[in-house]
Image 1 (cartoon, rainbow, N blue to C red):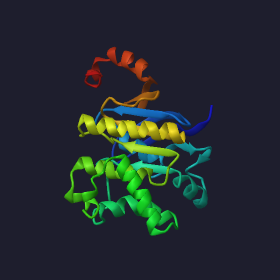
Image 2: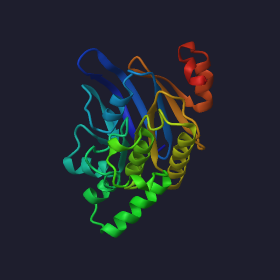
Image 3: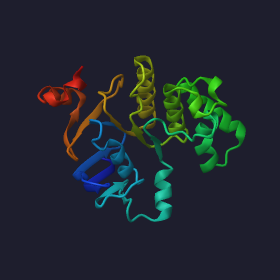
Length: 244
């Protein structure tokens, strides 16, 4: 079993009570894993811990066997080059055009020339059907749905091996959700990428096998395939909303 990410006994407190209390998680390479949690359960914080943007008060996170807390600057940079991240509400740079937002990782991390930047950005924007009339718009000038599509295009621009997604489809219509799910499934299968998504909604449209974990009271309290978790949730009337 090829483990790409492992969190052991995570504890984290942020301005108050503990958010996580002994949380454990293991991701195998080439899979899709969805963490379901109610609003306020700490999903966004967990993604930041697992990607190294935050550090736990106790416990460890390893990516490809490297402990993020003790890794050298060079090792961390190499790991981050393999990551893509979509923050909740897209989190595009507010004073930068949509095109330049998507192009930013290429311009920052590579030395490719502008014609190649244009080609790669155009390819990713086409995948997610980003309206090219938005190229020179800033994020505040376009809707949430188009911002999320642009953020996903930016996250894939460096062809990452490990993709962290924070509520990528929440608030979107079914057509947009199906498009995003289809693109992500195809990318995962083609590149054998590992995708970790957190959401307050039951995932739809993914056409590959994926695992679901239920986040509650600071721990992953249940996990399994989509079919197994549907059966489990039917026993837990507390989360009936996810079965609609």
